[in-house]
View 1: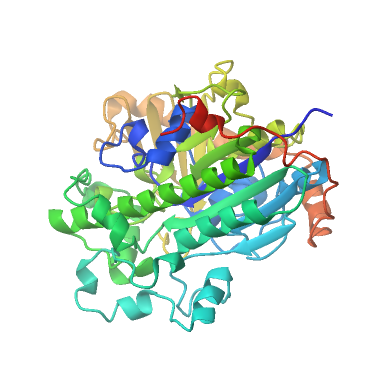
View 2 (view 1 turned 180 degrees about the vertical axis):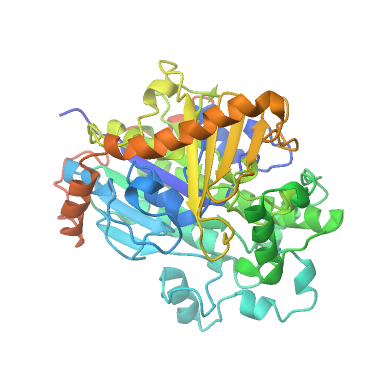
Length: 506
C-alpha cells in the first residue's frame, strides 16, 4: 500500500484573512504562518459556510451545507463527522483543543479527544462543561479568568474585550493547546499515520495576549476599522448591534462609537493573540521535525470564521461582511503539493474535508457537497462559480429567521428571508462594502437573479446529498470511540525537516 501522510489540521477560532504577514498584512507578526505560505498554497478567497463557530464546523466536518446537516446555530447537535473514515483507513485520530461539537466530548470518529473549549464560559447561559484547561487551573489552585472577574475591574466598559493575560503564560489557552499538541507528537508510541486536529481557542475574544506577545506589536500601527454605517443596514443587523451593546458577549462591552484609540487597542490585542498562536504553530512544526516526520506530514491551517473588530459598527461575527466570512486557509506539503502559490479561486471552507480524505487515499462519499481543493492547489481547477453561507436566528441574531450570502464573481448578495431589504456589493469596485446596491435600478436584474439562485440552491442541494441521512444513522450507532487503527509501520519513517532545509524555514 502507498505510504499515507500524517495530517495536522490546525483550526483557529475567529481569525480574519488580514492577519498573516506573508499574505499582505504588514501589521502582523507571523513568521511561522509566513513559512507555511512560502511552502504551500494559500486560498485567499476562502469563505465559511456559516459565520459562527458550531454551524461552520459542523459543515466543515460533514461536507454538507448547514441546511442539509441541520446545524444552523451554536449548541445544536451534530450527527456526522468524516473523521471516522480516517480511523477506518488506519489513522490514529486525535483532537486537541477546540472543535465545538455538540455534545462537547462526543467521539465523532476520534480515538482521543482533549477538549479545550471557549475561553469565557463562566456564565449561567453557557452549557456546563469541564474541559482540560479548566482541570489545569484546578490542579494549580487558581481561578480561571472570565468576564465575571474582568467586568469588576476599572475601565472594563472601554476595553472592547481587550485584556492582558495575568496568570502564568503556560496556562494561556492557546499556549496550553499548542504545548499539549507538541507533547502528544513527542509522546505518541504508535506507528500508524495520525490525523491530529489542533483547535486553538483564540483569537476569539476575550482578546487576551500575554504581555510578552503584546510587546512585540508595541508602536506598530493597526489598520483602522471600516466606519460604522449601521443606520443604512438591514433591520436584522441593526438589532444585532443592539444585542452587542446591551450585554458583554464573550467579555466584550461593545460600544456604538468607540474612539480611534480604543479600536487601535482592541486590534493590537487581537493581532498579538494571533502572534501568540503563530508561535505555537512553530512549536508544533518543531515537534514534527524533532520526531523526524515533518516531510511526511501535511499541514493545513484555517479558521472557522472571522471577526468584525468594529468594522461597520459590529462586534465579533453573525454578519456576512468580508471581515466575518473570509478566512485564511493554507495547504502545505512541500515536495508533494505546490509551494508559494496564492490562489484567488472561490472556495468554501467545507472543501477542506474531502481534501483531507483525498490526501488520506479515501474517496469522499458521493453525497458530500464539498469538493477537494487538491485540483485547485495544482491549478487544474478554477474553483467554484459560487459560494454560499447561511445562518439562522439565535441568541444574538434575533432579527431574522435566516440570513444567506451568495458570492458570485465580483458581486456579493446577502438575503434576509423576512425582509424586503438586503445587501448587494460590488467587491471589485467596493472592497470595503460601503455602497449597498440593493435598491439601485441598474442592479435590479442582478439582485433578482442572485436571489433566485439562493432559492434554487437551497431547494436542490438536499437532493445532491441523498445518502447523508443514512450515513448519519450509521454514525449515531458508533458514538463510542472507533477501534484502534492497525499499525502500519509508517509513523517514524521519513527524513527531517524539509520545511527548514530547502528555504521554507526561517
